[in-house]
Image 1 (cartoon, rainbow, N blue to C red):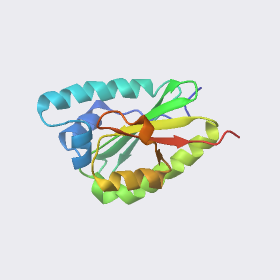
Image 2 (tube, helix red, strand yellow):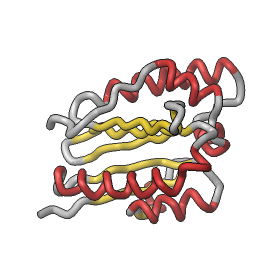
Image 3 (spheres, rainbow, N blue to C red):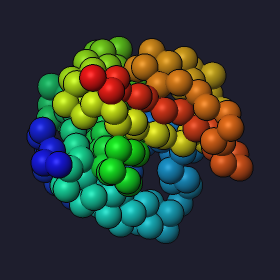
Image 4 (cartoon, rainbow, N blue to C red):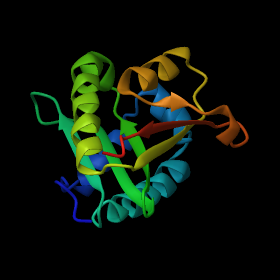
Amino acid sequence: MKALSTDIIPEVDLRYILANPWSISAMEWRLGDENSKESMFHYIQELLTLTEEGGYSKIWRDEKALPIAILGCYPVAKTKYTTFLVCSDLYEEHALKISFQMRKTLKVYAQYYPGCSIGIFSSSRHPHVFTWLRFLGFQYLPNRDDGNSRYFEYRSSSN
């Protein structure tokens, strides 16, 4: 299925985010040192490539055009998608606005992709992450947890 819209994410923006990560992104993506950041740079580039075929990618910027966050979603099966989010340290001051935009985007895509689900694993232990995922419409499915990662899923209606 063709994506509704996919932003082009310049390498410089991804490098900026990885060099200046939000504390939760730094933990989730294991950005402790330069080698880890370089490995994650290549890995996230691969994920962004996957969004080009039936998926979605979005970048948010601040008023100075600095990257705040990158969101991606890509298919892993016929009716199953997975998503990822990586944010710069600018995210805190824009979190509310971006969260409402993400929730709206999920609702639009749920109508466009009836009967599909989006899964995400989170290894964050920050309690607000789980509240935020529920705000977006994800449900926690503990039977799908993987090691230290908790599994959340967003389901569209079947129409």
